[in-house]
Length: 433
Image (cartoon, rainbow, N blue to C red; front, side, top):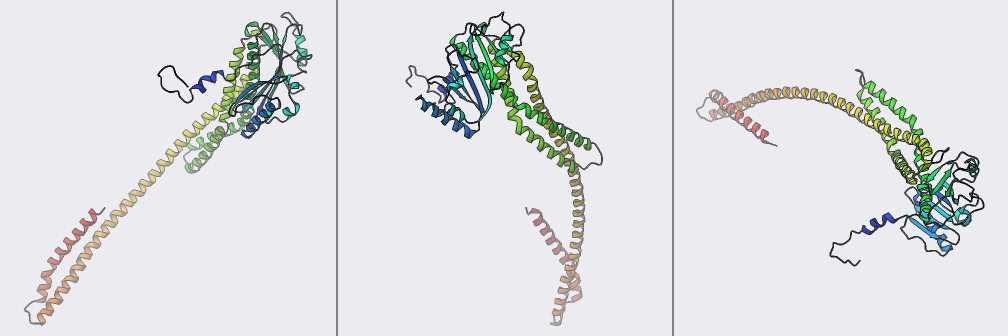
């Protein structure tokens, strides 16, 4: 890239990071519009198949396919528009059709999508929703209308809704899955611009997806609750046994180590799910705030409904996760205390063993010294006897010596020589490393 100023070279990721704020920009939609939204959970292998399946749709309509490494894609086909996004755990498809349907939800945008292509989508559906943006005249609605008339579009269920985006639109839903397998959102257009409509639909679909994804941790939390109580009681039993004078610390330490492994396994196996639930819930709150809801008299707003129904489940997940973390810390503290006790006992045993070994060493040294003394006497005796025999031999050959006197006088000299050699040997041993 040509630069106009003498500045350092660009970081390799500069433009990618800079343009990230423009990624996944909302559609600019012509009104009226009806939309269908699918969110699918996929494995890594299914994600690769999904990309190829999307390319096949583009080839069918002669539309440029998504780039190789892209994680979002939008395009206009003959009779519909599509928006595809690939997230960490799931992928979403949004289909848009720009016309006024005869029936608000029965004539969905999906009817414009090739049936054979839809049937071959990979993954498992976690969210499916229809949304329709209509004018107030199309459904004979105004601020003074009886809300019960809107309930007919939701199979007679109680309606939840509010005015949004500064009064430019009103949204209604019942947060239920209907007989067709889809949830429903009805948007009444008061003064929506094309850009606002795209952002509003995207926020509603994201609220629905993130709400369900946040709740995926709730069944896990309920399943882990008995295991948490069991581990808590087991820790109490172990710590209570630690206070008794006649307990077996080695056995307790084995039980505590096993308990620690079980608790850490629970935490490591479910940490991602609980952390994801918290992150998804924050996204739901953010998207609800972005709607800028204003109450419609007589019904709950989306934010109120979601908070009352979703927050207790998320708090339960957070509580279970927090309790497991505290339990892990308590097990770790108990393990450390018990290991300290075991180490002290082992140290005392080692001190007793060292004392015993020191006593034995002293006894062996004394015995060695006694043996050395006896050995010196024995060596002196045999050396003096040899000198005596030599003197007798010389006396036989005519040398004038008294063997007895020679033998007696040699004893002191022999003792001195043996003592000096013994001292020299001790010195050599002491200097040997």
